[in-house]
Amino acid sequence: MGDHGNQDDLTAALAIIQQQMQTQQQQMLQMHQTIQNQQQAAQEAAENAAREEREQADKEARRPWQTGMLRCLTLQGVWEEWWRV
Image (cartoon, rainbow, N blue to C red; front, side):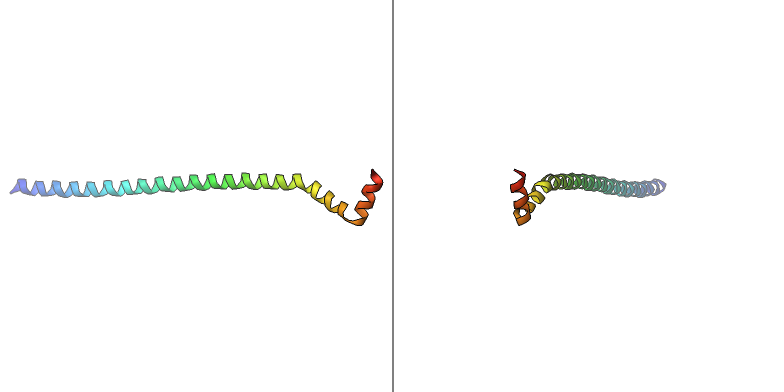
């Protein structure tokens, strides 16, 4: 009878250990997913910042041409350009 009780205790202990291991595995998977999400968010933020910087640089590069062209399209701008030549 004593052996049967010990076996029941061992079975219960193994069930508890198995449950703890499953819980730890789930926590590790969640941590891994969180890290992946954070890395993806950081990469997307860096890509967005780089894209915005390129777009801003493109706008800055086009601005002198655009403003100069608009000035030339006014009557005064045409007159000034004609006399400058």
